[in-house]
Amino acid sequence: MPEFSRSQLAVYGAIAVALLLVGARWIRSAEAEGGSSGGSGLSFGADSFRPSEEGSRDVVVHVAGAVRRPGVYRLPAGARVTEAVERAGGLAPGALEDSINLAARLSDGQQVVVPARGASSSATSAGAAEGPVSLGSATLEQLDGIEGIGPVTAQDILDYRDEHGGLSSIEQLNEVSGIGPATMESLRDRLQP
Picture 1 (cartoon, rainbow, N blue to C red):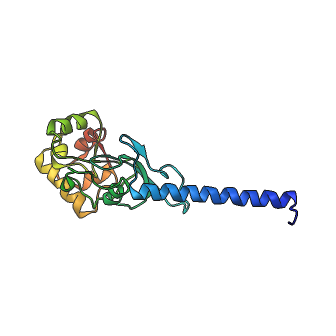
Picture 2: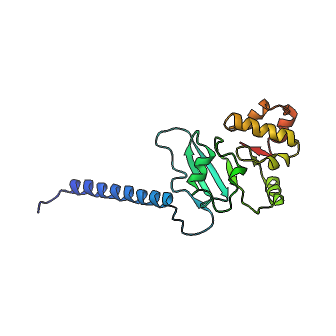
Picture 3: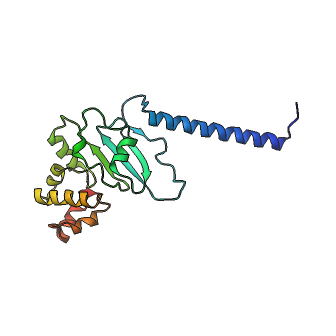
């Protein structure tokens, strides 16, 4: 058997460690895509907070509600709500798929909430009162529940969102009829992209 120098052993050791890390990552990604979730509760995607290799701007979103693996996920810039839902394991039984716009573009820091059957509208209203409503996934009822937005304006926002592939910033609301500068200022704290 040939003898190895210290430098050769160090190189072989580094290669072995690198192979183990690649294998562990592959196993984690296979488990995440395979849907093997060991329990219930909040979970985070395996690669949620790692920097992007391509250097492109990624978005980090929180997927909650009626999905199989709620959590925080990193997706490529330009990704759609449907991709975030897929990353979260897909829709859970009882999810109201038609209540959210799956084609809307995601924005960084957005929360995507998939409502479930049997969730009362009062619970939705209470959730809207506690924090900002996401323009990317808000329902007509959620928007209508915000002071300063009535049912007509809420529908105009949804129509604009559908026509333009989502809303990437609050400032885009200036382009929706019925929303002027005064309304914009009052809505800034109650909405998020």
